[in-house]
Image (cartoon, rainbow, N blue to C red):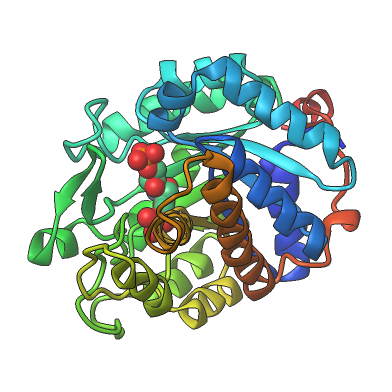
Length: 338
Ligand code: G3H
Ligand code: 13P
Ligand code: ZN
């Protein structure tokens, strides 16, 4: 199956009441893990690459990895998405590389750190929507700022400051009218990375009620939850058991995400959990079999460990079982629909 616009997949998810995990890819083993999980569970998939991923792997390698995944798995509908594009130029270069969906994250300025004004956000998002929709490419935008910081991206907000930058439902409504974006990432108290919450989050720090309010106002906009790793205790324990040093931490419970899916969440971004699974598996081989030096001896278990996490999320989000039912719509056809 060719790569399809993400909008088609999210529309299908909305019609059928499920969510779709968006998993980050930086290398061959990660995309293989995602495709292993997708084929085992018959799931449509969103594979996404951050700016960091594009520079780490180089666009050409990444493009061919995505194309290989599509070629080898013709039964799996795939959307290829730019995660956190910091400027219209980043999004346009992704479109040139064949991405079928882009995120214009105008919640922050182009430095990826400074919270941006509403006007700036509308301006850059609109520029991307105009060009992307003419080509049938989906656009995700963001209103409000996520907490924390990961590899240089993020405003580094915490405490009261983070609360001040949560999504305002009224502003979200205005923003979608002003930009015509397809999907909207909302800030509800999550943050990127492994250290999200110091205890199991309750409604005062993870504001799921905001999602319900935004969905009531924007029933036709697909909501996106970033920073949605669950940071499972078992994965932290494996890392620490084999010489790692991860501090106690809590992520977003899968049940909270499932609640969000009932209220319009259609795309769920997960990266950290896969990083934890990979790291734990590699550490285990290094600790138990220190004589090993062939990268395949530790990359293979790492790939399996990531596939297990992705599979569990695909089942929990409800995308499992739908791959053969998502309509195949080309970018050209999609462009005519806008
Ligand atoms: O946006 C956060 C994702 O986990 C990607 O992270 O920018 O380190 O590739 P990255
Ligand atoms: P996590 O760090 O929680 O996996 O979030 C990933 C993400 O939001 C990518 O955009
Ligand atoms: Zn994110």
